Image 1 (cartoon, rainbow, N blue to C red):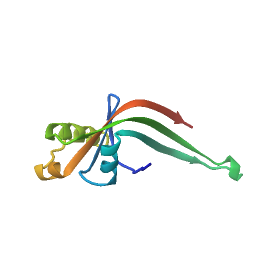
Image 2: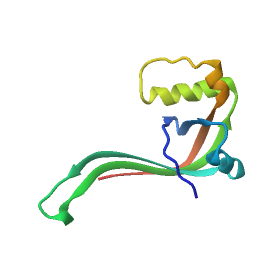
Image 3: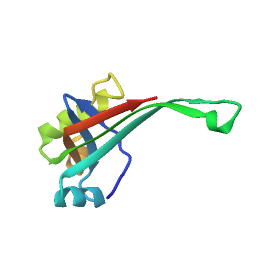
Length: 117
């Protein structure tokens, strides 16, 4: 098992992540492309007089899927656009030098559940 926090993009049942072309997560995906993911969002802490009444409002999603490593320039640009659109409405360009060093990971989701408190 291996977990690493990453920025992501989501569209139509597919997650996209960007990564260096080498490293532990890439080695593990090459050995076994079946992956799990978890995304959470802290809404707020709920304070109370007694410790056992404290709580947390949150949203979370947990799921699994199959990871594909995208090294084709056009596929990488599409994935990077989806990632960036998650955080900004700007349109970005990606220098060739950066695209050469970057790998995009595409996770086709086969199972996903959500929870909120």
